[in-house]
Image (cartoon, rainbow, N blue to C red; front, side):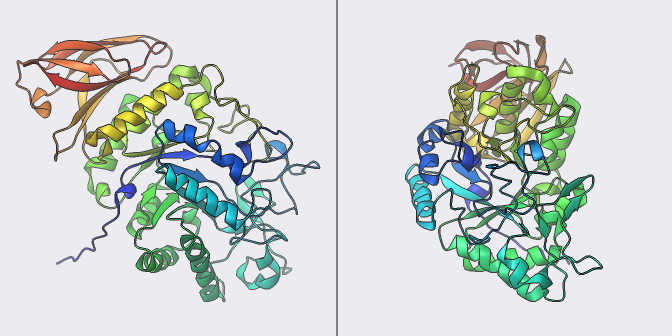
Amino acid sequence: DCILGLVVDRERARFGTWYEMFTRSQGTDPTRGSTFRECEARLSEIRKMGFDVIYLPPIHPIGVTNRKGKNNATVAAPGDPGSPYATGSSFGGHKAIAPELGTLDDFAHFIAACDRLGMEVAIDFAIQCSPDHPYVKEHPEWFFKRPDGSIKFAENPPKKYQDIYPLDFSCAAWKSLWQEMFDILDFWAERGVRIFRVDNPHTKPLPFWKWLIAGLKKKHPDLIFFAEAFTRPKMMKLLGKVGFTQSYTYFTWRNTKHELTEYLTELTQTEMRDYYRGNFFTNTPDILPFFLQSSGRPGFKIRAVLAATLSSSYGIYNGFELCENRALKGREEYADSEKYEYKVWDWDRPGNIKDLITTINRARAQHKALQGYDNLRFYRADNDDILAYSKTDPGTDDSILVVVNLNPHEVRDCLVHIDPWDFGLGEHDSYVVHDLITGNRWTWHGRTNYVRLDPHVEPAHLFVIEKIR
């Protein structure tokens, strides 16, 4: 017989609405990065949109040696802030706060401000060091070495990261290195952080993660670990099995009806649902999908609806709500990325989709059906560009029916064939479908009904089924 372990997580492990806030870009001064206190000024607006997790990229001191310049230039100009993923400087390492953001007390104040609004803070655990990190002098034995004894910088061909040294988790001194990683996360957990987004976990040994997560959750049972692992499916699954609570997914690149149906069926209707929870981010600081680059405002609406309703956990990276889609030519990367420079945004600029995001997130908060992960069912729609699916909460019989036009450029219409009994209806009953996005209502009859979706108006229906009495 096979004995399986059972892990019971808190509700946030399954249901959460994430907003990635790039801390340096929340202010109004283009000559410097914003502070934690300036970041606090945006929290009420973000909460009003319906987000309950604020995710921060690395908040630690940034190295100076080989600092990257604008658009990832290998040479920084005077005043360039560098990438926050090049962690460590004379101001400290992974247990320190970047001085331009504030102090540990300011960070505590930020966490308290989020808590008052009903939001949690997630921080990035990026396990790499700039050449200026204190570890380089204090623990050179923890790093990969070249034949001449010098420390190797990071590479992920064809990319090179001259501002980063990776740590060697299989070095002779691995025990002290592993313990230091434990101590870092314990340090932040003691200061109120309960969610860690882990950068590139697939490049570290699986036994390390199994040991680390089990030990930390023994001390802090409510911790959540989110794997940033855009890698081979087998490795992504293994990370879930060794303890990661959530993971990024391939949703970012699944755009067609066939791709979405096949992938979501695998995630939610196979054994993967027992150990793997996909958090559907629409975009990240590293990834501006080609679909968003070419689809305009309708494309952003489409991806927001899909992310928020296909998975119970989803997120956006700041700027998505503004439909920001300027990219480096031929690449899935943002032009003038705030990873390498200071940015000031007009958070109310024309063309934003904040109202739609607020409506979708309100529906997620009010409807238990959208808070479930593996309660997804697809229906037949007689058009390859129209995707139809439902979610039902078995405990309350709360149901949501979603119909999306996946084509951001053209009107699509077709017949949609549902199973009325999924909604407590008979095969020949009449009923009202109430669209939570527009407020419109239509009377439908039986299994087969007509839909028409213009992406330049609204590309999706978010239906509540109302019985006619």
